[in-house]
Structure formats: C-alpha cells, structure tokens
Length: 124
Image (cartoon, rainbow, N blue to C red):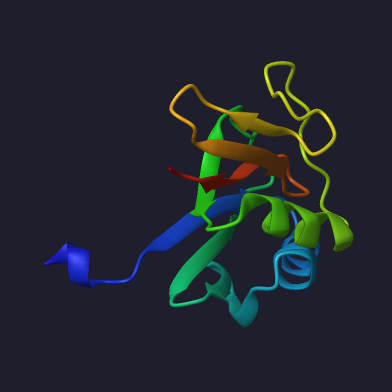
C-alpha cells in the first residue's frame, strides 16, 4: 500500500524564511504553505516538510537525497544557483565534490543553510 503513495521528507530548520529561500530559489522547489507546524514545499510529485526547532544540531549524515540521471548536469545546475558542494577528502572529483563508489555509483553532497546534509546520486 505505501509503495503507491508519495513520499514526504522532513528536515529541520531554525529559520523558515532562510529555509524557504534556499529550497525555493536554489533547489527549485515550489512553496505550498507555512503554518505553526512547518513549511511545506513540493519537489515534483513529492513533498518536503521543513520543521522549525530553534535548538537542534544537524546530524553529520545525509538526511535527504535525490537519484538523478546525470549527476554532472545537476551539480553544474546547482552550482550556478549558488549551491556549494562538500569536498570530502575521499571524493575523487575535488572540483565538484563527486565521489565515485567502487560500484560505479556517483554521489555529491551539499548542505542547506541549517547544515542539513543533502545529496544527489547517479546509480549504475
């Protein structure tokens, strides 16, 4: 039953306005609404709820990720919109921060304004 539904991801923010600017203008998501319980955004057919918690500490792992067909094109598009990618020492591509796993999968990580780790991945 759940496989036929749409996913709603959750991330945490300290500032709704800052989060909205990032997810809307940098990532291209559509603003839906904001209320005392969260900021709602649409990402294609899926939703993201951004919940405000003033005293959270972001975890140091990916909290949201997107599977993409062409990682170079997506990374380039995001960089042109002002998104900076993490340059982890294990990533072979230190210009764009793209890591190629032993399986051939390719992943790049970036952070939202609150430090939440997000990723794009191209799988073989």
